[in-house]
Amino acid sequence: MITPVDAPGGEPSTLPTGTLHAATSPAITADHLARSFGTVHALVDVSLRVERGTVCALLGRNGAGKTTTVRILTTLLPADAGRAQVSGFDVASQAPEVRTRIGVTGQTATMDELLTGAENLETIGRFCHLGAAVSGRRATALLEQFDLTAAARQLVKHYSGGMRRRLDLAASLIADPEVLFLDEPTTGLDPVSRAEMWTSIRGLVAGGTTVLLTTQYLDEADRLADTIVVVDRGLVVAEGTPEQLKASIGRPFVRVTLPEPDPAILEKVRRLLGEEAEVSGRSVSAPAPHGLNTLEEVVEQLRGLGVAVHEVGLEHPSLDEVFSTVTDHSAHRVEQPVSPAGAA
Amino acid sequence: MSAAAVPTQGGLRAGLLDAYTATRRFLIRGMRQPDVIFGSILIPVIFVVLFGYVFGSSIRLPGGGNYRSYLMPGLFAMTILFSSNNVAVAVATDMSEGVVDRFRTLPIARSAIVIGRSLSSLILGIPVLAVMIVCGLAVGWHPEDGLGNAVLAFLLFELFGFAIGWLGVLVGLLAGGAQAADVIISIPTFLLGFISSVFVDPALMPAWLRVIAYWNPMSAVVQAGRQLFGNTIGPPPAGVWSLDHPIVTTVGLAMIIIIVVAPICVRLYSHSTR
Image (cartoon, rainbow over all chains, first blue to last red):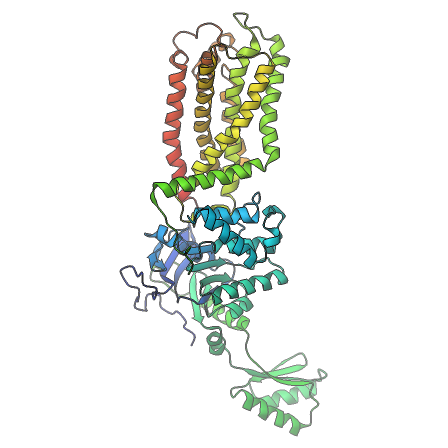
């Protein structure tokens, strides 16, 4: 079910006080993270938990707090309040331990334009203390895996946008990280490159890597993630599996489309479908509380009415609708005191 | 998980390896920027022609010595001083790109990247200095106090260059961007370079400027070079300690800059957020 976060701090903390080194600890736990930049409250209260071997999508609009969350979890930015552990290590007090276990691909390209793809990967490998020989072997394997072998000896400045992203992703994987952070991995990519990126990410997940990715694209979250955490204005406004999120908002509805937008017939159909029916263009839609059974009833009744129909169908709400519903919610909620600190 | 899963970290050995890797990266980068290399070689060569011949033809030294012999140690030091510009611009460029975040999420020694930057700048400066030496020999300059002292002079210049490189790193870290870094570092390097004994004898300057030029650390660096090369024109002015003890001054100054500035750079780098 959908879990609206009504009262931050209301849930008892389940975080262990000591450090969990066991492989069974969650890959990521974040507990009431907050971070402000001057008067801008980038994060008000974000808690999340990502189990090992799963993909979690942090979904939100620009400025929702996605990147700030990732920067805190990847040791790049200290939080003002709250705490977080990655692979059982505290991101603030055990940053070096965290850094040996994570891979990070940010929004901006981080590969050196004046180095070749292979040199870039080898350099990152050496920085991860793999040694020259292992770094070279890993680089070769990753270039192969990401379809960059042909470009391995070319300077990165000659790479396309999609190739750069794939190289960046490959660089994040050189030391075989336990947890991979991908900050908007496909933003700005053309559809073909995006599809390639998705394939690459799915491949990693199949290999058992835990992934936290941020995205503003619902279809991306829907396709890649096991769980989705929706953030808006620095708050978690909803979380669950894609199916749970859709089901919680979404009652399915039935849509009847006519061949012509004839007002008289539209009105007839509207009355037939009940009080909640709405006319839009040449179609009428209404909630279908009993799903396929409702659809069946509607088809029967339309037949009885003797109206020529272009199409009748049952539709499910898209994640887009879920997203706008929960984020509108939060827009409404921000007017009330939402956090103990009253930060928003 | 593969054998590569848990990289080792920490320790002096890892720190040195990190610094080596960073230096290597910056060296590869540096060698692939022919425009920068060309510029950093061309400008000093232009200076040799400009000051050695265009202005130099009208400059008479107090003792009647060879002006180009007097000039060359100054130009060596000047070349090294100006190399800090490239460092500042390169660091500022790095800081404005995503690559900083990448490095800061890696398990590397915090000092590795900035050490790599200043070491690579030192190494990339060697061929430039070599070109300058050839130029100097071509225009009639030569060490007059033995090869050993000449080598010492160049080592002294390189130590000075290493220290100046750290100042370049500092400016690069503090400046808001590459252009800002360029402007911020160009002004002091120009003033330090020109209001000094690099090109002319400060004895002929107006009194107030003469005091600045005498006490300018660049004058001490150049004086140290001239002394070791045996290219001096009479004894240094009385009462200016730094010119009476130019080698001690240069070494001391370089050490102070390195000891003070390097840790600041490491701190700034590890705590920077874009």
